[in-house]
Amino acid sequence: MVVAPVDDQVGMLLRELQRFRMRVRQVWPMPESVPADADVVYCEYSPDLARRLPWIPGDARSALVVILPATETVHADALCHATPNAILPRPFTQNAVLSSLVLARSQFGYERRLRSKIEKLDDNLRSMRTVERAKAILMATRQMPETEAYGFIRRQAMDRRVSASAVAAAIVDSFELLGYDHQQ
Image 1 (tube, rainbow, N blue to C red):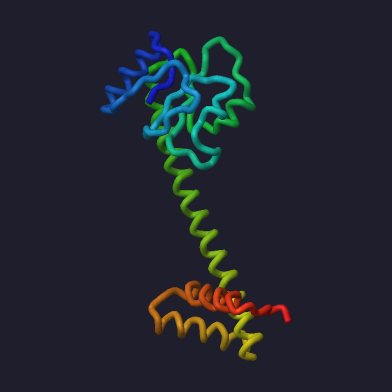
Image 2 (tube, one colour):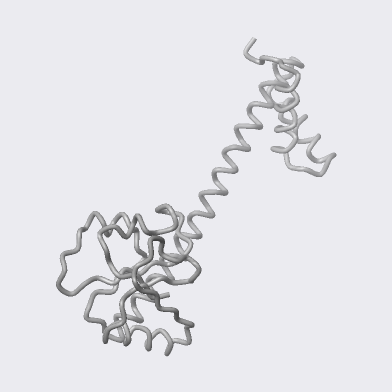
């Protein structure tokens, strides 16, 4: 998707993207919300671009390339808040178009992989906290040593063919459902 007014430069950009076998859609005037139904969005710079993006920074749905003006002043803060994956300064060249496309897709893929790893780490941390809480409950209610409480959780998980965190969550949930206060 190219969100920019058609001129000689944008016409060249559209032809180059089509030459790379990409289906290209051009949109102008600048919509209130930049469409996010494309793999890569080339978008004309505007100081309020970050406000027009339909995603929050760090959670982009499309790779973003900001088209920088040749003469107009660019505000660094506004550009940073848009969190582009690449920029394409005017006047364009064939190499600049190709470079911006490769960089944007590469950066977007890298950020997506990092977000996935962060989500997995968050899940692991939540699971560890739940297991620790379940161990504390077992230690308090059944007077078990820590290793025995953990072994109990693991055995129950293996017997039921579920994760230890699922067993731990069930212990914590049932404990809370019964209204016990493990702080006592």
